[in-house]
Image (cartoon, rainbow, N blue to C red; front, side):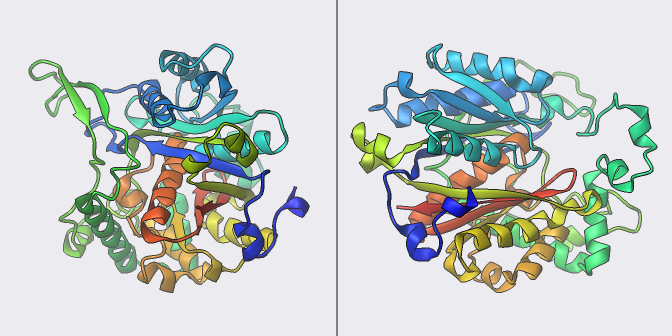
Length: 420
């Protein structure tokens, strides 16, 4: 496929009937698992909310024209396939619309968008949705490490095989030690993530991308005992952002994964609940349906690369150069970057390696904060970042944007988008 991709900035920006365009890109608020406003919601409930909102945001589109829906999901029972299908039907989609789920760990919903785009590009479907859902409150019991695993793998002579189940926090410590990322700069990076996210929330910058969720909420005490009656609440803002985050406060936190480590609960991504969805079709289909005025932008391409499982955080530093190389682009051609902050250690390393520290300081990388402040609901993160990217490009007037993240078991993924 790489040989048929546009090459060079002019080619990437040029409109063509075969482009895969995005008509809406929406997300729920991202909330803290176990403590936040969506802790009593189900992942499929969150998916239902964004799918229903996608239909409402595109009232001129007959729902029967949506042929397939791909949903990124990592932790849900049965891969979320049955619950996601139920949520889709409950939202008003017809039985003729098919659905499948995707699990590429942290990049699952970016992979969903890429897969639907590929289906559109090859004529498999005309209109589709790339989405993602996750409730880490409900489904994080194993902490993302399999509990019923072939014993031989645990004793494999292949270190990389064994390292696939290494706790993600330990991979963060590996990156920090191997590549010289200190505790002070990790804490500073984390504080800046919260500062940017708090400022964006205060300005109302997230309002166009967020779909409020009306759900249940039950207060509990420290022992988990219910307090009072269950309430119906409407959650409309991300609640993991700490507007008062300070370096002094970050510095007081103890290492979370290794006694002599530098990764803490404060400079690591939050365990979160949320969902997101993007509506895609070819430009020619949008024109035929009279929907050209609703086009937000287009998906151009995405790549995935592998790396050592015990330093999976370096993934974006490998995926982004490959993506830009396939498209004949330079880092200077990109107006906005959304690079997932799984951990401050790997975020800093990747920006250093990519030569993007200056861009980060200028507010071109994660200008509205990242996963340290906003959260990281595994299956939904890629589509969440896409929504933040597309709406952010619109506000700033930028055209070219990249979404990228590291991926558990040792991968990195990156996707390139263009705003119109």
